[in-house]
Length: 167
Image 1 (cartoon, rainbow, N blue to C red):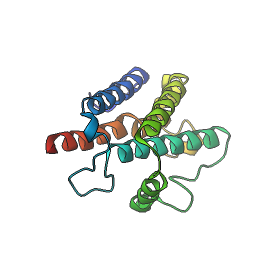
Image 2 (cartoon, rainbow, N blue to C red):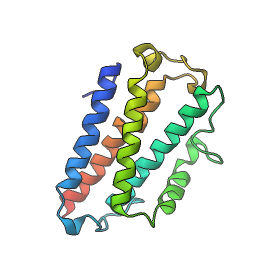
Image 3 (cartoon, rainbow, N blue to C red):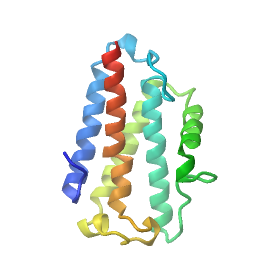
């Protein structure tokens, strides 16, 4: 499915890619769940991929709450710019090294459902009209949700498929 252009597609693709990702993870044998990826990458195992998604969900939820309260969110995060994402992503990776895979998966599931509910609570116009909300700048709220959900899940799927093929 192409990039969502309406609310129905946004909700459907987000849920579809999330489900695909979880089904792929569930297809791994137990010994692979904690195994390091055999390729060079920032994310070294399944947990790392899930906590990356989780932290980006938290950032999206924070931007949303701040923006909807009439404030200007610090994006992507305090002390970082869109150009310094590699550094931010490395900090995210480090932050979660002590979290277990099961906790990561539970938290990701919760944050995914929060975002789905948030998206469902908006009208088509609110989601897909550029500049509808001042805090989203020149883009639409839907574009932020797409980046935090369906597009990011697609990124994770590709990484997990690569891991599966390498086994």
